[in-house]
Image (cartoon, rainbow, N blue to C red; front, top):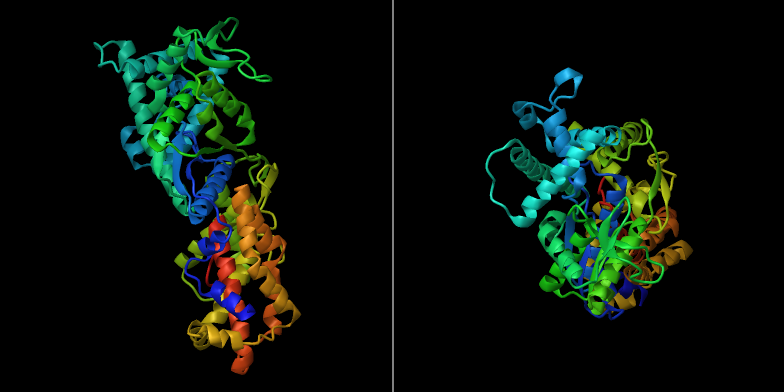
Length: 523
């Protein structure tokens, strides 16, 4: 019985779907919104946490048989972009000691990462200027109102004047920055094996969102809130909720009404059972407001379908340059750490290109591991300290054990081929003599289906990470390998042992890929 069970694991071509099918999950249609970063801004650890959690959710739900649509909903509209555009156009002219924006030839030669880094630093400078210079702030605000008016009214280009020229220059800049940001983001996503079915953005819902609020004003569902932040909104929608602001009196639309328009658009397109938003826990109030708005509009059923899948924050970073949460910077720092590990520990002959690729994989795997190994609601400090210590609790322990098991298979290909060809009768006759450590390892292998289902129900990867590392399946592999020799052993001993380790490698490899860690065959 044990040999049959291990054989099914070791040689399954669809291990995870087969294991999850045992639990009879009813198929649903799910729309999963995750990552969703702002354009013109470097990707940070908070973005990465949403990305890795969301990617895990889309993978495991697909494997469980659900119909899934994954969406990357870009932050590509708002007054922050008019402020950046106004700073770029009116301030970055190089005059009187001011910063100078790149010349077209220089800009064309920059890669997408360099462009996004420049836009990020320019936004920080624009934000500082906005706080200190009331005139700059007012002009940037007016520019946003005019940009939004063009988008809402779908105006043709008006007669040339200084104001209209600036508005359309700003809109064209924003379009270019979105395209640059998409190139930059797709490169980052490819490193972590992340794909989306749909790329969307706030800018697609400016008109629809504005119209929805105007309808609610006419219907008397919105009231005018006086004060410094005078706006249209809804008061006391649900007990315990603050007022819901939807549109400023000057006509500027707020983020929530674009989200309202987008959920209606998704419902019309997909009619999903659940709309899952993988967003940090600080946004809990936002989604409570969105659900409240839908109820006010009579869409109670749609409100119930919205699921805010929240997670904690990266509250601190320990890097050489202090607090820098840019994932690009963290990858660079991690590559230095992994390079030092390789120089110290790596003995296999390889080219510089192969070593560079290995550095990148080690770094990306550790970044992913630092996120997925924690319970989703936990806040944590990030550091590469101890990330590449062989005795540490890190991604390296998984990679090394997987690599050792792969080497074992490569050294025993004849045994592997024999195992593949065994029939049920052969397996029933097999009497594995694998010792206490081997039996414990076998139990951990065969418990993987329960672990998978637990992860599916919680929609988080940490139970799998706990099973592979902290409950020490990988450690048990290390304890068992020396005591169960294969080379030179008679087939009656060698085949059951080979079967055990092949099944262990299968679970390690499939589990690692599911939680976002790329197995490395030789390390």
